[in-house]
Amino acid sequence: MKLLFDQNLSRKLVNLLADIFLNCSHVQFHGLEEKTDTEIWEFAIMNDFCIVTQDADFVERSRLYGSPPKVVWLRCGNAPTKQVESLLRFGVEAIQELLNNPSIHCLELY
Image (cartoon, rainbow, N blue to C red; front, side, top):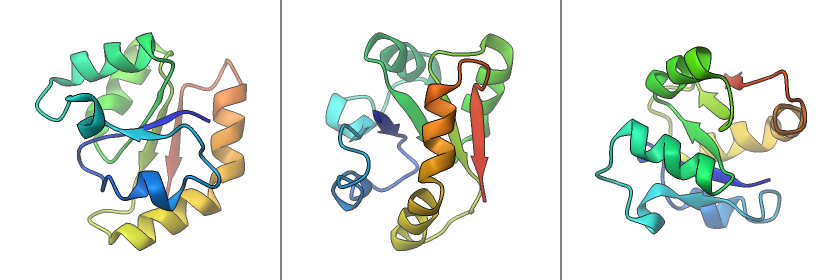
């Protein structure tokens, strides 16, 4: 599962979740931290990433354009990184379903 964590999430998640999301990355690792949502969206398409974010803008873009890329929208608010990690671990099966099902474009995790 190739996930791209948005700027609003800790880059520590890459290492914390490497055991279940082998190819995850963070926008900072690609020089995208100051880029627009459109540029991040296009990067995700070109590099086969699913965007993980707390930003509703990517969700709206997903509703308008569909996928790729797929979007995981974390609805946990300003939560500590450990809580975000737990939410993603809890949702691993739902994320797998999102990535495997061509008719699903976005997943909300609470």
